[in-house]
Image 1: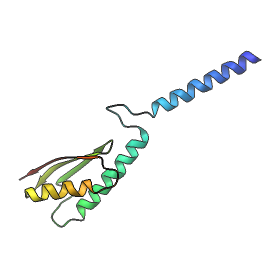
Image 2 (image 1 turned 135 degrees about the vertical axis):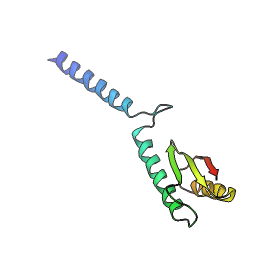
Image 3 (image 1 turned 60 degrees about the vertical axis):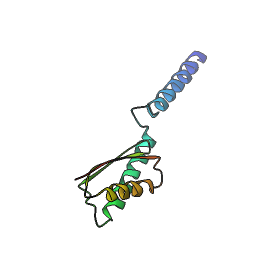
Image 4 (image 1 turned 90 degrees about the vertical axis):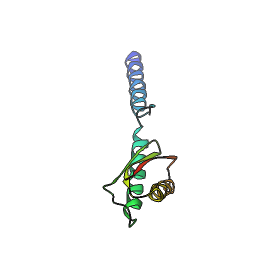
Length: 104
């Protein structure tokens, strides 16, 4: 009876460890919580950019990974490149911005 209880406890601990390890992040993969946070950041940046008169949400792509926002696409001037970067930096949770916007 004691062996059965011990085996059940060991299996429960191993299952718990496996579940926690599955939620951990790696250098190329965000954890579940980080993925949700990144999705929220992306949505906020897109919403702020869409609220600007000069931007088109279809011309600027926003992606976020572990708090780093990457902007890509096309704008009409260098000022718009800087403005979009500043908008992204102003969103809570953004750690860095990779501004790959191109002036057409």
